[in-house]
Length: 399
Image (cartoon, rainbow, N blue to C red; front, top):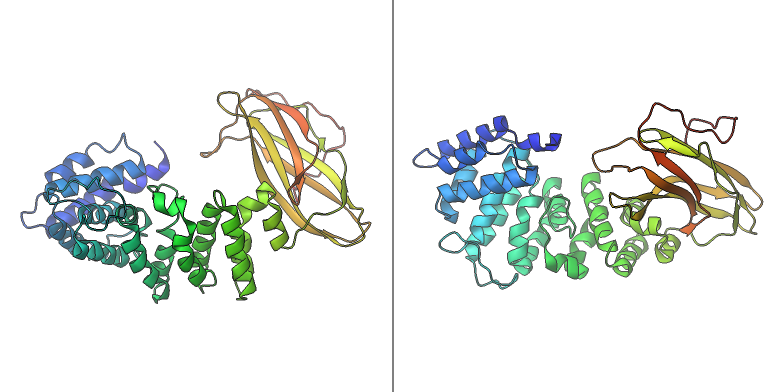
């Protein structure tokens, strides 16, 4: 069980149940109590879903008493943060449920299979909750069920005085929201959320702008032309924050070497000579690091603006070859100028990535153009030192 699961741990969940029991007529929520006793085996999102379903079960799936209980319970000043996720999710699920509490099986966007008043009120509840706990995860059932109606209301939030609500307009509609339920309509048609992104890309709040950039970056994975065109529109329209938002929004395309994205950001193809990559080891124990360096020379007649990345090739759990691109630096070289690049990569396990023993390779990437790679091995963890290639140690400070 990861540490994030404790965000909905028993102590916090108990506080939510107590507040809700004070807000319901008979003061008892047995299904929620039962769900709370069985959280240990569930992930964070699984806990939110189980608790939301239990609250609806306790209230017979009826929207009005669910929304009323959540509004009364969350009036408590101490009820903030992740514990509000299941409360908001119960409201959203209740709004798109039928009379018996079961969600309709009709196609998303049918618009007629739910109570419009309940649907709109659920959006209001999530808007009210988001300053105390971001509601993007709870928003997904509403967007799946009737994206047209939900987007029409959420588009109006771009002018809200509260930056949390403006951020919800962007984050709640992200096509590839981490931990969030997929909304097929948002993935298939990026134009649906473009008005929200265009309205918020230069927002005064950095949190809002970062959400907008992440949103467009999501679209760039399946709709690269759309992402470049949208960022181009931001840049042509000016705005203090437009360049930074556009750069962050196109980061995946930059790593992929997309020529349109690189050119838009001022990094066209360049004429450079790249020396073969030097590694400080033939083999690295799992958990250690490898360092590498190279020299880059501008052999062209004009200044060379460079995005310098490196691509790591590695085996996955099944031995298949995978690759991932990591940032190093951005530099400008005058004609004839040289620069040395020194960087390192750690094979220490982290929560989002695990390394397996086998054959690896690393290669520099210059404005999206992949250079010759250098191969090495990652071994099972041992106390052995890496096998040196060069007796002269590299500068330990990566650039």
